[in-house]
Length: 75
Image (cartoon, rainbow, N blue to C red; front, side):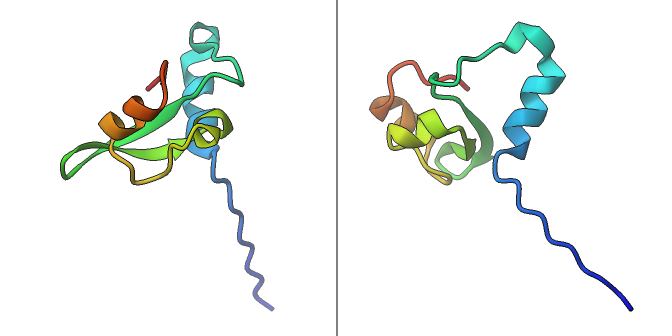
């Protein structure tokens, strides 16, 4: 019998990025942080941390719009 497992890890890219950077990328949990991809109209948000979501950033939003909303947004 075949079995299928589905795992949803919405913040996996951020955790992987921070782990790869080591201790040099220590980001406080309350610091808004996003990862971006190139898209039409400029870079777009691919993943956010909870702090960035709290301030109104969302996946698909342009980076310039997110920076206008959130002061001190890290990329």
